[in-house]
Length: 409
Length: 155
Image (tube, rainbow over all chains, first blue to last red; front, top):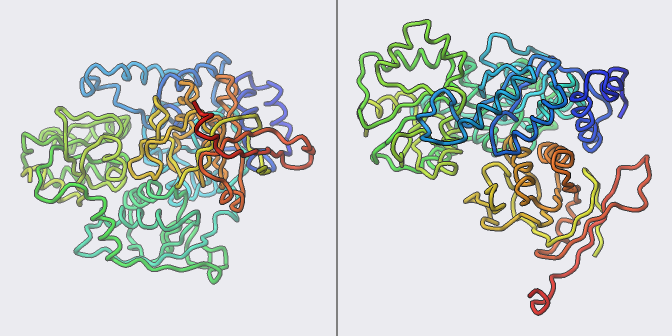
């Protein structure tokens, strides 16, 4: 790899022993994957802060001992549980372990945002910015919706880049690798497909059919919101490791098909998705039969935005929650704090919404009694929940989730 | 049989070859205590990856696969080498870090589709760095495969 003076300085320890260690790992990584040089980044989002076992602590403690300090603004991804509410998890010792792990990353200079939706923050990357983001749904959002540039990063590569401010130029950092190479024509939302479910199912379908390609999506509603595209991207990343899509006429690098494909749309394979395929995916993700009693509603995978919380408050206003149903909403610490300054928060709390920050309810169960059936409007939750927690799931639109939370059927 | 493959992370390994029928996600797909494949939909569900030379068409899944690999290394239950048809940056960084944190090297190599189909199940495999590496060329690893030992010799 060609090294610039700054790289040589980092390698020689000019920016401290932790940056030198991180750089050594990054160089081995870049060389193995065929990078020719390093580029500078303007920010990082770190997933290595999620506690998986003592190795998580061993790794970061090594960097702490070397006196590590991040060189770019760095946020932290979700944790395995909400450390503010240990009672939700019984006497799980992972609460203390997660606290200790988060603290080690804070000592490196990271901001403990503990969210899978770093794009909901006021400060976020913009078109053309190079960042190093880990967390699959955030990667898709950064590349597709913000037009920022991040490759698919795993744990450790994220904090290494934060410590050096550099990353090997690979994958989606390179402009030509961002061209659409597959065209997917989509059906429109319809009465059979509530809008929130539509975007999730489209994502799941696109993710499972893209097979390493970046798809250009035709036919998405022109008024698609960031929350809609969030659920599309999260479902696509869960289903097939997708790291970027172009919403033609919607996302910043796709004002039209020609530009999305970097002037070569005729070279792309085109496929058409029918509504029936989306309905089939929906049925496959629904492991709980209609009519069976639901024990909990879980919303906010990825974390609910302020707008989504406010929409939910409107639906719940004046309603009473069924006593035997738990109603979870996962949000970031920052969204919760912001929500608490408005009136929607009280409406949600009065109804009986249980807020969970820092995490997602499909990682470590937070249910009071062993829930068997969960209802959600998140395709990502429906994908991971049953396998992670061994329960059944019913996937339905937000309004149907609310209706069930009120009536329990 | 001897196969030459491109090295992603150099090193030596010996073990039984475990060829997977589908891509595997290390996070969520592998029990990190027993190193057993626990993904209910995986064709090799129940197989133990610990100590094996693990061959898979590709890796799958979340950013946490590198953490999952490091946790397996800590438990002494990681594969002894990983062979892939498509390079995987997430597993690679996990293996690179493991070398310094736990002093354990998990060599990783890219294998061509033609060689992939030549891999049998449950062969015994040895992986060593190629002796004729030239500095200007991508480093290579040599994979030697032997048929499974007869039952009489296994006990």
